[in-house]
Length: 464
Image 1: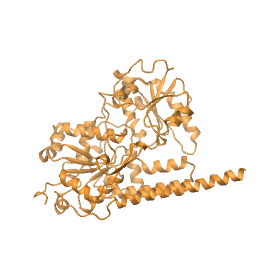
Image 2: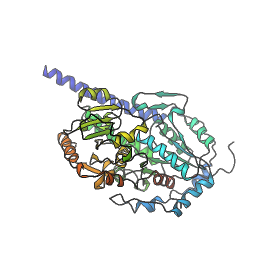
Image 3: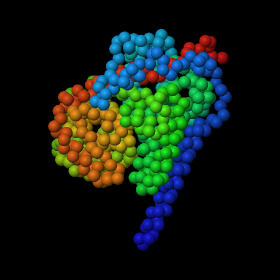
Image 4: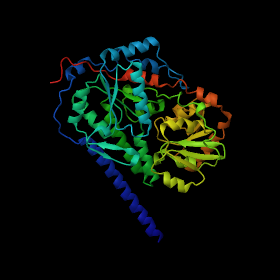
């Protein structure tokens, strides 16, 4: 009987490994084909010869290189002077054409990328007095597409011809490719083919996410690491055509360089936090009334990549509350009946749910940044997180929270480390926690975004 079980488990592992390879291969193939492998070249309002001759990756208007040298390990705030702002914004305002951003995310989703999209658009248009529009091309805008229930993902049938028509119609002064999905890859192929400069951003540690998910499924480490290697190689090739790659933490920049990315293309930037919406004044004493305190929350998608079970397994006083929906919600509700699951909340409700908590635990291992951490801090709530990429760059001041050591080879010790870190939070005060993240503004993020995007010359003649 035991032999049969061992044999069955072995066959299951091999089958899952094969399916994973097939899945990765099919995704790569579909992205490479980009639906229309042979598309007629579109004559857009950008002369390729002009772009090649006049564009300089490090233009005089690019200020971020100067700023990077002043970033300290304590994340000392960096700012633009009024003179620098005017110098940076003037060419964009004088041009007046929109900035075009292609992304596989869409506004119907709830994710950190969507938060970035909304805030960048608002700040760019505010800074330019509405004279420059940040226009997004998202998968839901295409007529033919595949909708999925997982993370509300949408896969559009976008051809190079349709991408060319979108660019020709928009006649943008700059193009940014925000994500590396099927739409991003089709756009990249078109831009490279037509010698149109663009920049990209690295938002998600996808190779590490794939590897860790395979390991949790019980697959051999060699297979998981090999798939991580293949995924990293694919993403590295994607970003190789970019003029510059925006990354949002020092540890992420180091990880990409260690993974073979060109160091000269890495551009360190910042993301912001809306400290007006997220503030201690949003605290509602009735919200968690009846629950034993202290209240410790997790906020985010209830999905495997968030590693929520490390939080739920913690042996700490009070009540654990999970804010968010996702594919694991029903499973975790049944498995952890002592925790409170409030489900997904509307964006306007999140300040209240965070500010009304005492502490937050952020157990994710693969988030590039995790914007909910500074949002909790802005609401006066300190955070416990693992000492990994993302949190290690966010929880850097004593009042923000405490980092717990993580070792993938000793998972049982990791939860104990979280507990030890949690017991240190009572020494922190809400005023100091909020003050630590006030320098993180979306205005600064938008200015850095504009300082790095390659601008395109105006066409000498109209489209023919």
